[in-house]
Image (cartoon, rainbow, N blue to C red; front, side):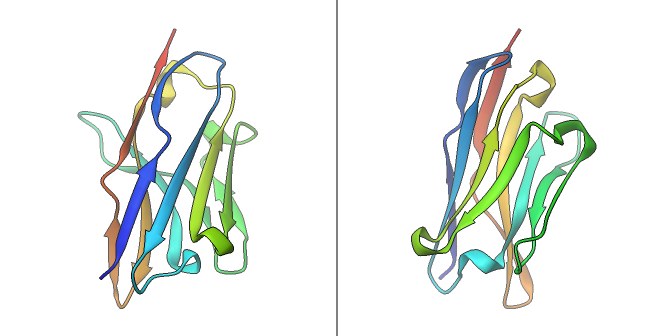
Length: 115
């Protein structure tokens, strides 16, 4: 059974930082985790950052220079370090993995950035 569990969200003031974690368990490994997405009410779930099996990273323009995605294979965890947070970063953040021909999602962790 595959499970992804996100954590690390919360309330932070604009300009602050948070580190999100996505812990993988079951048959899945961290190299199956593709990246982080976020969702705000009334909008579709959008990609924030991705990481390939070989560690190549990509970011949506709005977070470049502020967010960093990384992977710790020993801990089976993928992180999203978020710095210089803005109110528009407020969303529920999800990690996504692809394994056995299908996508997997965690339950999400909410991030609220106050002005």
